[in-house]
Length: 254
Image 1 (tube, rainbow, N blue to C red):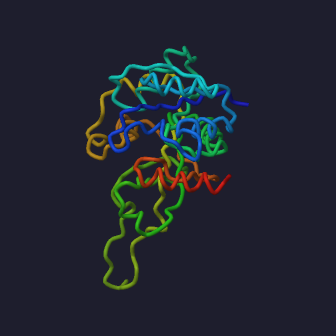
Image 2: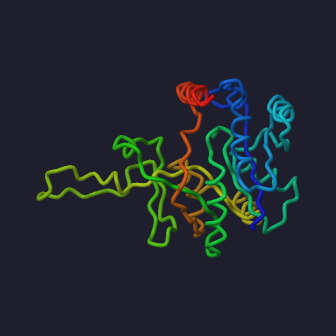
Image 3: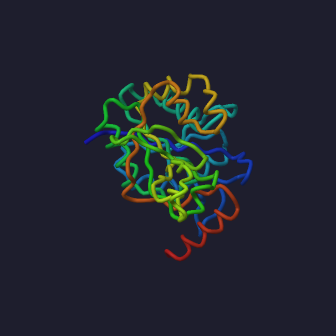
């Protein structure tokens, strides 16, 4: 069975929800909820990568492992890459990036993404997607859409509505193909050697335009295999409203 590590990037200075990893969700911090979800996967190593001593102390208090990273890093991917280097992970070791604000990330989905990367040696990354929940998500810029080829390799990711349906004078009904669109789930698996190269590469114009790091990979000509998620996580915690929804979910689960 494939051995892999999960690295969870977590920073205190979130613009929309400061101190997010340490926010309480029904008696446990967000970072603990995420960590516990991740440990339900087959991962042989789970580490939180952070630049904040308070987050580090919290993780260690519940028995988690921490890797301190530079506070000036630009992205969660850079934080994962630096942690992988500090941990001296071997080149072929698969590393999974799970954001620290995903308290409902299914362990089985983490395993599925790893298996997808293993099954597609021609791909440099693996991620996941699922159907849209509502027509409104089709035009929602906060919901990233992905279009794939017949082999499940990503063609493009966008905040815009894709695929687009041209107007048809003979079709007066609902023509927006929101049922065909796929919602991207922000989880990534890559080998440690590729992670280093990806993190060191300059952002591409497409990445800068859409604010989507995965477009750097596509601009480089790298391949991303997209698994059809068998277990779908609840939305991550980006805003106060997201936090309130997570508190409600976990309170009801008690």
